[in-house]
Image 1 (cartoon, one colour):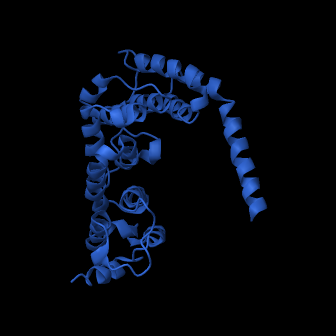
Image 2 (image 1 turned 30 degrees about the horizontal axis):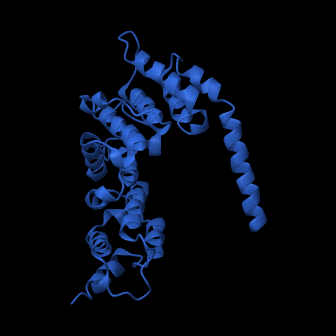
Image 3 (image 1 turned 180 degrees about the horizontal axis):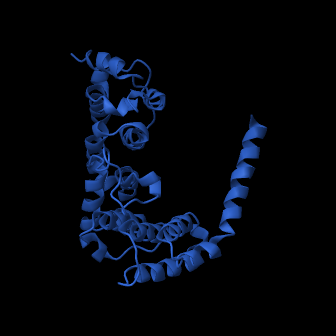
Amino acid sequence: MAEQGRLWAYVELATYDAVRAGVPVFRALLTHPDPGVRTGAAYTLAWFPEEADGSVSALAWAIDAAQEPAVESAPGELATMLVASGLLGAAPEVRWLADPRPVLRWAAAIGRVRVLGAAADAATVEELVSWASAPPDDAASGPVEGEWVPFLDGDRGGYAGLALRQLGPRHEERAFDALLDRLPTVSGERSLTALGAALRLAFPDGPAAAGTPVAVLPPRQRRLAEVLGRSTEPWLIDGQEFGNVAMLVGEYGLPRSREAMLAYLGRVP
């Protein structure tokens, strides 16, 4: 098993280096006539912070070009460029937080909090929290045409939820509240994302000890257990029980099914 681990580590690093060698190509593709290619190029550049010096300037040029009237660019393309810039260390301008297009406000908040962290301004914090707490707006019909972004396969609320940790301890309670607001509305992979972030905040010192009575759980842990007990969606994927969620919850010492969680909560005096 140890040798297998070393082999896969080698494969992963070799793959990363092979794609990194194409960074100059990705920068050039930011001017490609196909907006899908431009979006993919910007997204790929975001994974290589070692190349930030050249990529940030290329993205800045592409962002300016995407706003030219003669260029056909979708909001999702521009949003991808803004997030990529933030991930590479260049915070999007604060003016994007006032843009009428929601996906661009989301992108600005993601990019800004990546750079500013706990020093993020109030407008950035508010935008991020609102996305992290909201139910998915594309649950029934899919993403609005032109607004899809490749980060986390388009789960903008989930990505905002992951970014909350960068706000630091001062905003932890708001971050936890936002995640609990969203959790009952999501299922499948989106449930895993929100649940994983909530569990990390609820269990900062690791899993609960086996046999811990619910009545003595700290407030955050008990609140999370209550949300999971009264909510059906987080436990499901395509209407079926999602084993990955059961395993994740169990790793933190909580019951591995909604029925068991309800029984656990029923023991409260």
